[in-house]
Length: 357
Image (tube, rainbow, N blue to C red; front, side, top):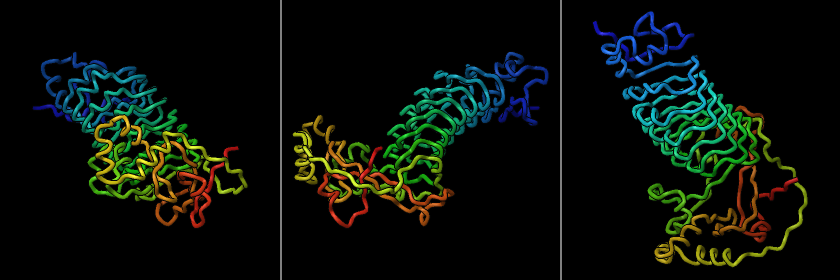
């Protein structure tokens, strides 16, 4: 009779625990010391493993031999770090549950989990998220609630298949503007953070723009550009309560004289004076200049480009008609950049300056 161990649960609280031998301990079952000739053969065929509600302080090294594993539960343990040697061997993993541990960061080798679709690291002590996590092209859900995150990586825009991003109850002060390019995102939860405003991202409208890195689109003048915010994401659910968001409380202010640097004047002349192939040809042999100009932005009023000198403004958008929200506050602040006081003083727009007390 063949023992089917495609699913193995070693969770103390579970009522469906399946052990290779009734008398072996959890450690014996994982290391396969009790019957290395028969049990080990079956364990390497495991596709789902539940090690939740234990006291593991590190990933068992034997896990690296379970190359067929697709689902791994490690919730409610005492993990303080993840072994890169183990992670890089789990190339077929699609589901990873690390909730309720003591992790302060994730190793860069997390990107080796190339097939990962679902990652949850709630209730840990994460202080940062490695940029290489954004190489997980198949990731559909990312859960990072109840941690100590102050920011998210700017490369998050490369998670093109992400449908749900849940980062409530952290210490995030600014969301990356690249969040606005996640076209497949349906659920966004940023409740209980330190957010004052929501981002805007300048994007090229051309369909071919998706073939270029995000940082290159800023200097691609061969296509029309616009500014995208959360309304372009077509969210189905959006949670943002318990954030100190900016409020529309108008006061008078004094406008300062604008003094542009030589670099700013030159950058604006190049970006706005050349277009299409002319710009590409002019920068072809100047990679450093192209790198600098890649940080250019678009004025929300005149739609002309600028580099480092701008006015940070805000518009207030009513989301109630477009997104399912639970917050009683339907109007949220969206960031906007203007190139000059001249544009700010133009009539007909709905942008307001930001006053910091």
